[in-house]
Image 1 (cartoon, rainbow, N blue to C red):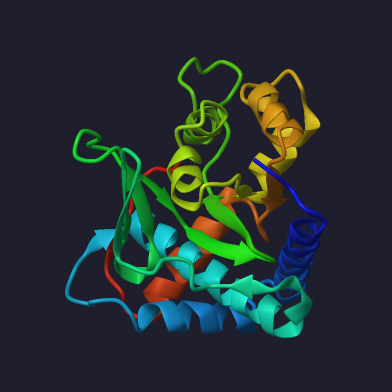
Image 2: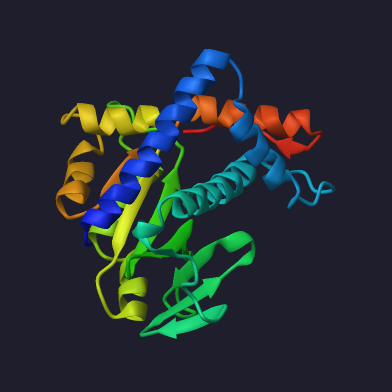
Length: 243
């Protein structure tokens, strides 16, 4: 992974955007208008006849919201040179990998037909010519008495082993940047205590050139906000426990 000064500037812009959103959320005591408009934008893409799991809606909403945020920052900061035209085709073979542009902007990569569990990228853009991966994790960290690695740890391990970034390194034939966006509680936990599960591999990610940013709220608040926004708009969904 590689981290350039311009990528760091973009991360600061995103971090400030989420900080302001979080402060506004606290002041109002409810979903801020900007976030509400993003939920509206997301709902317009939904087939309302399907009762889907809430995790599906949250993942898609976070991806949609991130891309709106990146476009807003791009308009306000043309010097960052953010280019959204990354993939010329919907399917590309790069070395042993099959990279696909799915519906709703999701990018997946798997080792041709062998890999039954492709990894997905929430967004991939060029930042001043550097390919940059964005990945959002709104779940919680593992508790000290739990021996089962959290999803956050699994993704960080995949990054450390190169399984996650290698498909795009093969495609672009150069190193890439990676921005990991975490719920505010998970971010603070991993950054604030070296003895907690996942903190060591998180530190290695940062030392290796990765970027990590806190989202505007905790895991529970993000789930509550999106569930509330969907309910307000009469969207049916199935609820499940989040870990």
